[in-house]
Amino acid sequence: NLEELKRLSRMTSDMLFLARSEHGLLRLDKHDVDLAAELNELRELFEPLADETGKTITVEGEGVVAGDSDMLRRAFSNLLSNAIKYSPDNTCTAIHLERDSDCVNVMITNTMSGQVPANLERLFDRFYRADSSRFYNTEGAGLGLSITRSIIHAHGGELSAEQQGREIVFKVRLLMD
Image 1: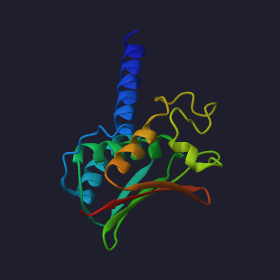
Image 2 (image 1 turned 180 degrees about the vertical axis):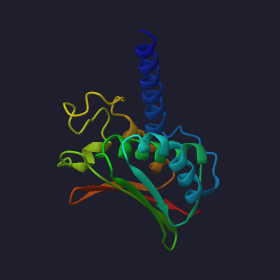
Image 3 (image 1 turned 60 degrees about the vertical axis):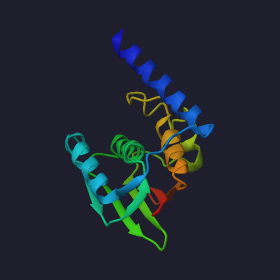
């Protein structure tokens, strides 16, 4: 059917993106990117979806980095989409930007529904789903966080995840220039 064909096409496109990334073939169109503005635009984009289940999204802080705005938007869109998909109803996803001496740190914090995966680094593996039995109704092939990490690495940045109680915090570190 058409939906399955679209899904396979997206997966193929994502796999090609990851292959280009692994071989250093991603071309970045770098310029100053106002991360607070980009993240607020994404917040507005995702708010209707979040509202359906009583979820909220907040963005605080500021920071400008040298980067490819389209790729960074894709990376943060993946993180925000996952935060909304995998958090319980009536919770908040908090995005906090913090400038450091030569970089901007972005922390995306949300409550997890169910158990936080024991090995958070596995979240960035291709095709990994934390608990496929719990998420059988969610879209995706488990490539989003792999793509997100490859985009952040292509920008010379870092992406990690850590558990804080029932919350998961994704930390993105990007250079300002």
